[in-house]
Length: 632
Image 1 (tube, rainbow, N blue to C red):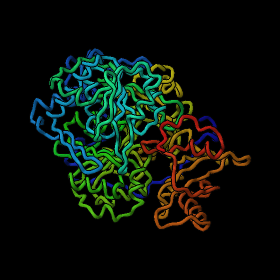
Image 2: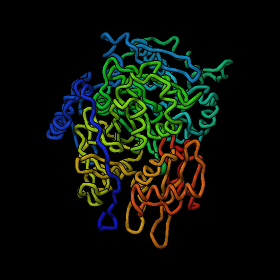
Image 3: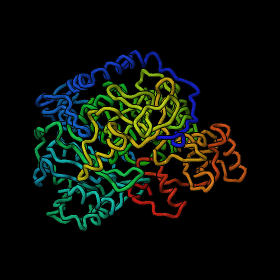
Image 4: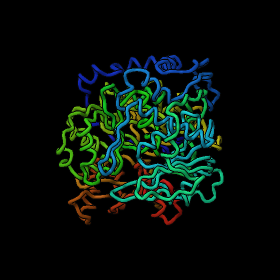
């Protein structure tokens, strides 16, 4: 970022700080963030070793960290299996009969698994897979909707040392084929259908099409949900129930090296060809376990509800693995947030007395669009901790989320990535909150905001968000593409470059401004898209907004915005002028959009992130590149 023209300008200011309730601080796992953080940074290896000591290992490690820049190994020489910490250690104690998983179908049907029952089902699936010849190091593609078999299949693969590759069940046949082929999967686990908004999505047909040209696949296991059941073609295809009904409910967990791969998760986010991010048993286990425990202040009596899908990293880390390692009760519903009506999630919170609720800013804005009426219909008094993930949450959505749930629940706005594996920057429940800020780094994480040469920038000046030291849950490589992995650590030498731009305020709080690729350059100023979008959404008529830069011969770029209005508001020239005036008042004249277009839809990834490059490509009439993660 050499030169003043490279400086990212910051227009946002925090208007109010929200202190956590005293009773939350008094009962939290961490009550003094500053003290814990300072100790963790003074001796990070000791800090992480202490956390790892809370979990079970077959054999202890010889060294906590082996750092050969840019390659890391954590808990070197240690032997473990993540499923032992998710299941066995609970089943040996009183949690054997505690509810681990509550599944609710779109039609209201439910299934409940205790920790003991879940372990038996995982073992049966693991033995069934072994009977098909699947073993340690083999790859298994899981293409399932949000049903309990998704949990069971992931854990069963991990149990026997197979590497799972979960593919979100909304992906097309071509996207699925690409991921199966790259992983060279030996087996695929799918379902006949998934249900979404009352419609049956034919998954088996998508798999049949995807398997054309994937010679590595030897078996396809199908969860059959419909009557009459879909026809299968043995011996390659077999029914899930047939796989497990004769299998033993006992299966010893494979002894894994701490650095043995646990899973490959393909992600493209908003850029480029999908890349297979590789996470391993040991470090990932430690990092996700403690972040879930401390960030959500997870206790035995909690009911935990994360709205993500296990097809994304949030689902891997904070629906399946970390909550189970902490002995939580996980609520796992199928279906959309507003089907059959916008009260769906609120009604589930009331019915199951959910205490921890973790969702995306996109989902919160969607609920906000329907107004206060829906959350007010339900008793939300069980809620204790709220969370957000996926992209920066604009202050207006934060304040609405806080208000409609009773103005008493801390909101932990978490920043992390598929590549980081675990939450990296977040408030803990004891930390004062600033709406729109991800607050401070998690203990053990050393983050900074720097220029292109890696020099720290002053407070309230934008720059590149970086992590200065390795951490346990970091990805180990990009599958079959180690050079692509190295670029994360070599774009700015000696630090991990996240690809996001951010700034820190005078209190050391981090504010994420968006992806570095999305920065708009206007008349020598560099503006983050998140600030412009947040300013628009702060207007009472706006439900969602996206901003892009368009080439301009005079200004370099101009700002164009796309706006979805709330119900009850109509597009007009007067509304255009009103919104521009609102941005001028909120951020200043430099941030006023030159063009503003009303729309009913924005292109998003299936995890809820706006794909601004698709908007820009359409605007400029160029190829948008890989759009396999596009929601529609």
